[in-house]
Amino acid sequence: MRVVVVGATGNVGSSLVRALAASAEIDSVLGVARRRPQLAVEKVEWARADIAVDQLAPFFRGAGAVVHLAWLIQPSRDHQQLARVNLEGSTRVFRAVAEADVPALVYASSVGAYSPGPKDRLVDESWPVGGVPTSFYARHKAEVERRLDAFELEHPRVRVVRMRPGLIFKRAAATGIRRLFVGPLLPATLLRPAFVPVVPNIPGLRFQAVHTDDVAAAYREAIVRDVEGAFNLAADPVLDPARIAELFDARLVRMPRRLARGATALSWRFHLQPTPPGWLDLALGVPLLDTVRARTELGWAPQVAADQALRELVDGIREGAGDATPPLAPGTSGPLRLREFVTGIGRRGGT
Image (cartoon, rainbow, N blue to C red; front, side, top):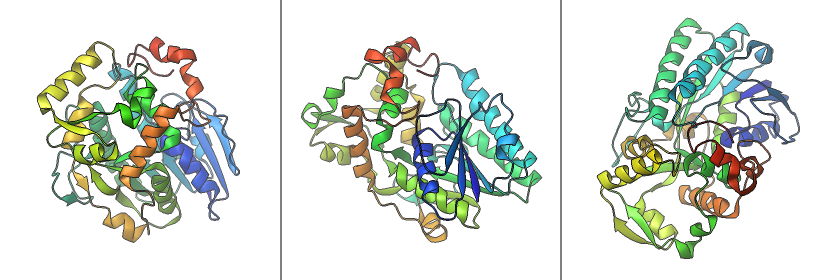
């Protein structure tokens, strides 16, 4: 099988191309991205394309499956650019899959696509997909799923799989995740356990995480198995302020939701960090995921615990870890993170 991975240089893509290359069922992989990486992986070739403007069908012809991972999180202040890539770009990928007569499409959805739900029990893939209204990320993920519904009706011969993971962490994605969500002003030394004296105890903050390599393993199984539909992906334990405080040997300090949201909104408004408050709303709103379907139909089980994945990420941020792709490489930020400052911390995309 030949597999095309669109958005192959980010957190999930960089792990997925490696997982596919190591799979006996996969003959070759084409990684498609806006910028060519320095990453060399056996059986993997690279091509440059922007899903919002370039012709995609020529890259897809002859493929047994296309995996759509391409997505913008920044620039968080340019909603037109975000919609151009996330919404219209995704629609263009789906149309190109049909035009190239590709038999399988695997789409990177998210826990963020779900409507607000419970934090005291797990929900399966039948939970409503409406997103959290105040989060552009959630609105876009939900809207793309609606467009994918229409695509499935129009093209019933295409096998469509939707992956809905929790937060996805690995050490090699540390610099990329810091750039997207924290920005250039965070001194890495502050992430040493000795410098984390307190963790904000925000009521209702409970979320799930999963290691990127475990997510890549689930994608690989979805490609080679005759499955379709949505799959939740998450690892134990559920993370909350108490668990995080224990992880970093820190003290819990109660912080009302309103205060936490106000601080996030104010720091974003003054360009101190690139994350709008809708991300906090998403973390507080999305349900906890039941992963029985992935475990039974994909034969999937996470190998890394959620708290271990989080610790790996934090250690990676402190150490400036990265990978040989533009979204993840520390060098992309420039000396003293100057290229991150040039973006206006959320005003423009790229670094």
